[in-house]
Length: 146
Image (cartoon, rainbow, N blue to C red; front, side, top):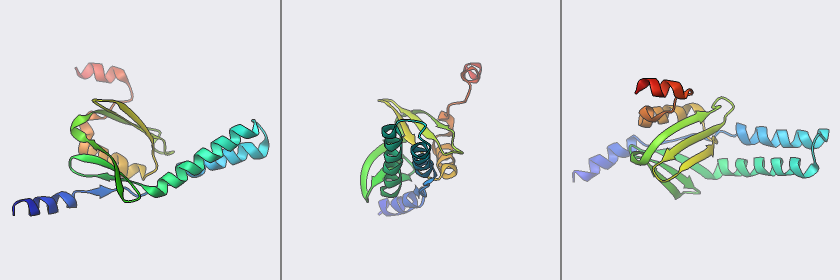
């Protein structure tokens, strides 16, 4: 019986981020504009546009969920991958206002993901769950803290 209230309080801490389609749309427009103004090879602009379409589809089929212990990636309602916070070593957002990229390092490997979700919500959740692991922009400030 003690497990039920724990699960209820655990699920209330769960946050699913809202999708953000700005990055895929920007990439599609960039690829399309290169095609229209003929600055580069047609194949390059086509590849850029297809990549933008791929990201747009991913933004609709993927969900990020922050629980008290894990970052969970969902694809079409099925758990795709779970990243336990206890295994994280560092994280950083690159160009979050564009939106840009999320970098995080686990004990086993580094990850670099495009931000297909609301960047403000992502940053808020990362700071709440893993604020002490945020990488500063300058490495010299890291060394001065030691």
